[in-house]
Image 1 (cartoon, rainbow, N blue to C red):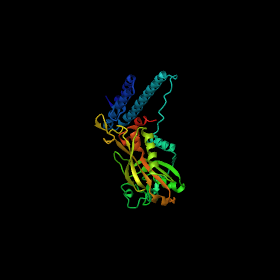
Image 2: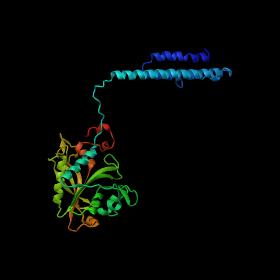
Image 3: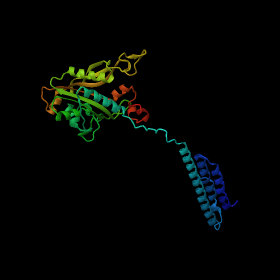
Image 4: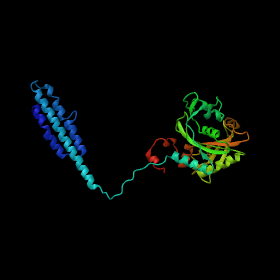
Length: 344
């Protein structure tokens, strides 16, 4: 069979195949067989250079005409299949059925936890304060009684923009801004994002904190203990036990770490005879740091010498993991809709 006869035989063969094609997969298979790079048409056209020069123009015109015809047949049948599928859908469609409500999203567990923390402190008389995430060295460190040689200023911990501008490492800087604007007495909590050069299974470069401050006349450690005990029991249950351990922070003196009885084993240290996986058998979980504000901090904001107060700070991710029983910090940042759908 010569080349022109072979070309002209393709259209009837394709048409016969199309008449039997009932799915998109069948259609694609025919397209590859006849019009693909290694298909029937390409195979025949590869023989054109072997023709005598006088025969090539006619064969080339025939090849182009057949290619257009094959393409037209293919597109026409594809349109017919699409129209048939649309008709079938319309026939199946029942306009009396209720519509499908798309998922509108939900609040992130970090947002929910932060809102609950702030709500508890608002009921205790605290105001909510905000501040910039890009801070000066003065507000982030110096005015909080952190001398230049303090380890918290090290480049391994702090993300510096310039020598004097940093991404805040703690929302404690908001306390200084608030004391500059407001005279005592005042009680505030400052929720927000903070940044540090730290990233592993239990740390992220960006996380969330809530810092608190109460300043006034005759504010004592007893007030601090009472407020934080009330907060912990409001967050984790009335049966939650609270203990304070001595610690050190540059901007509070004396300072303490606050522990709560384990949420999983309820302070027993074990569950079904095995050490608790959350508290590692101790029965206690560290939840926040606190202390009486160091008088050196008051000097930066021109507060009277007879003023006293306390400050505290907690990590929101830590509270959220305990609240929802999560064991992996990374789940908060993976944007997995299956995980986020669980929270309302």
